[in-house]
Length: 267
Image 1: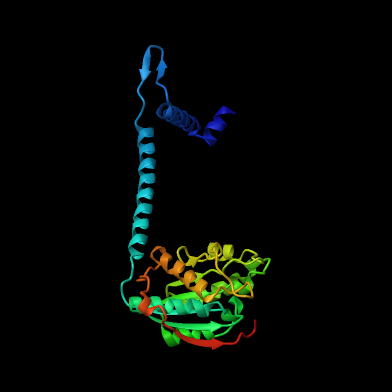
Image 2 (image 1 turned 120 degrees about the horizontal axis):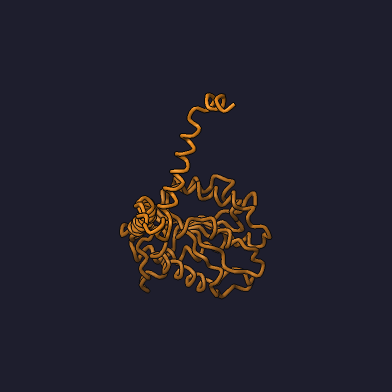
């Protein structure tokens, strides 16, 4: 019977010996304390130290790579000192924001265009070709979006994610800043959705600003809108794509942008 087993598994004993030897080798290599047999001590093999050292070096490499990546981002975010073509579009809160943005444009050598579309929202702009048309017409180098105030009532604002993404796709590779809507009593969380899903450094949260309102208790006054835009422009150096945004002198503070008024459709 033993002869038959030997014929069937001729190297069984050899494999068993090799397995035991490997187990002892691993045990001796990774043992934390010195192993003694009688009065003699067994010297630990450098195998474990080599592996652990390699893992540590790998972690250091990953950390260094991350640091390099952060440095690259910082380089990309250096302030662009060239003249910009600014385009701001959005709902009825856009007009006064655009008027103040025009003052910054004159101060810093930029050009600004604005489209104020009363009662519009993300759905309006995502589902028509209006934005496509003006992007082709003005060829802006920086875009400002003032949308969301008419959707703060939504209890499930995440349903607007497809429209938000569609607007961003229409803008393409052009740097943009989405100016979040100011806080209202019926804020259902749209600002959180925008901040979470837009690229870092491209969303300005306005919901925490204290803005004086008109008689409707919704729209910020002209002066409050100017302060609102001042807050946005003060933040621009920390944005994803900063550009020259020096505070406008009094001599250019009353500049008026090119405004195009549109009526809301397929709301």
